[in-house]
Amino acid sequence: MEFLERRRALVEDRLEEVIGVIEPAELSEELAHVTLSGGKRVRPMVTLLVCEATGGDPEDAVDFAVGIELVHTGSLVVDDVIDRSPVRRGVDSAWAAFGHGPALIASDGLLGEAFALFGQDPAATRVVAEAITELGEGEASELVDQPDGTEEYMTLARRKTGALFRAAAELGALAAAADGFTVEAFGDYAEGVGVAFQMRDDVLDATADPGELGKPTGIDERRERPSFVQVTDLTPEEANERAREEADRALDALAAADVADSQAREYLRDLAEFVVVRER
Image (cartoon, rainbow, N blue to C red):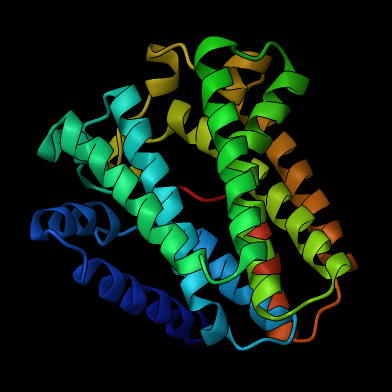
């Protein structure tokens, strides 16, 4: 655990640094509320671990890791507005704490700060821009063109969640100056992890205790949003099995990648195993 905590500390320290110098102070406070209130930091850890696994120094990938977390958090702010969810990460969501207008401004601010961190690297900027486009298309299709069946759901999950996971991994490989094949292999790995993560998220929304989860549950059913459980009519247990299949595909992609650091690789393997059994 010390291995992961040291790397998580790199992300947390840089997040505090970035948020702390934002002006005006009111915006900085709002961004601190939504960004520094906790979170699993899965995507930034993927960035650091992939960088290290491909022979890079994780400190060289910290800005990319923080940037992808800011993008992710910005998307959560908007999700909470759409879902009217009053709680995120165990605290008031942005709109519940500050109102709808300030929440949307906070989301814009998070994206702006993220691209300031990517801006010196055209390849990184392209990767993240493509992921945000996919994310937006996924969110739009979820609201107005709900999927019907497993295949359409999988497309949605890749756009809504897998794309940002893919970007996180590709950013880590880019920070380590990895070759194109390695960048793509790690991207395939992370996309599979992201899809499995989303499938498990849908199961938790249907089955978990809100207090333990740190956010309201049952939102998918109340808002008639296309969760994996509802779209496919699978039981939660069957849905978990399908998530496991996605995680296994992610592990196959990881096995094909050119890995320099075996310890970082093992933690990436652990992540693919963890996302399908997590309780939060």
